[in-house]
Each structure stands twice: as C-alpha cells, then as structure tokens.
Length: 182
Image (cartoon, rainbow, N blue to C red; front, top):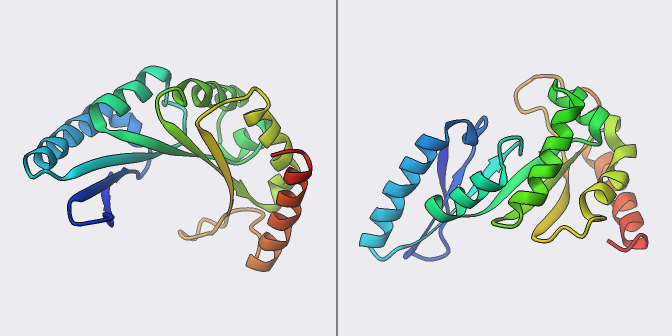
C-alpha cells in the first residue's frame, strides 16, 4: 500500500499508494493519508502523494477526493493495448477498457495522469492506435510513455520482448508517433 519515495530534501515527504489496487480500500487510503498529512503539517514537512492504479475505480469523484483529502497530485495507469488486447491481458471485458478511458478523461480534470503503455509482442500493433484513442480528443493533463514488460514473479507472461527487441520497437513506435504529431 503506501510507500515512501526519496524526498527531494529533508523537509519533503512523498508517498506512493500502490500494490494490488489501492483504490479498492479508499477509506483506509484516505485515513492513512490524513494522518500523514497531519504529521507533516505539524513538522512543517511538505507532503505530496501519488497512486498507481488500473484506472477502473479512478472516477472523477475519486480523483477529486484523492486530490483534496490525500494530496495525490498524479496517478499512473497501465494500459496493455486496445479493447480486445486489454481485456485479454487483464482477464476482463472490453467494457472495462472503455470505462478506464472514460475515467482517464474525467480524472485528469483533478490530477495528472501518466499512462504506462506496456509493450509485448502481442500488442505492438495496438500501440500507435492506442495513442490516438487516448489523445485525439484533446485530453489535458495526461502523458503516456512506453514500458517494457518483465516477468518478475515467474508468471510466464506471453509475448515478452527481450531488451534489444523492446528498444528497437520502442524507437520505431516513437519515430512513427513523432511523424503523426505526438
């Protein structure tokens, strides 16, 4: 759940809410954040927070609450491709993909969102169209970046790219995105 990052200076504290889906227990997250905020206020420590989420529960209302009550300034959301790929990778329905997209648009009114676009052999053809889906509506306060997928837990993720293969594909994708005005 909450984890402290290295502060910029001794009078700063930054907490990441991550692990599983932190928004599933918003009450606990809010309670912990309020206690930390109070402690930091008493000690004149600048406090900021961020969250790592799958985006499914990150509605406009929850983003507002995170901003106001938990001092969350940004959240990271991972997306593995367009609706069919996303649903296959997450083991969920395609409707979940569209709910996350809707939440991204709404939540970005309150907090900055960093979209991690995971790259595997299975979703290479989705990446550029996904950028269009994310940004063609002129959504603000959202950035996206490409990321390699690793098998840290021995789950045998299908379609993993080796580092050099990932870098080659990343370069090709970035060059195409630049040509397309991203």
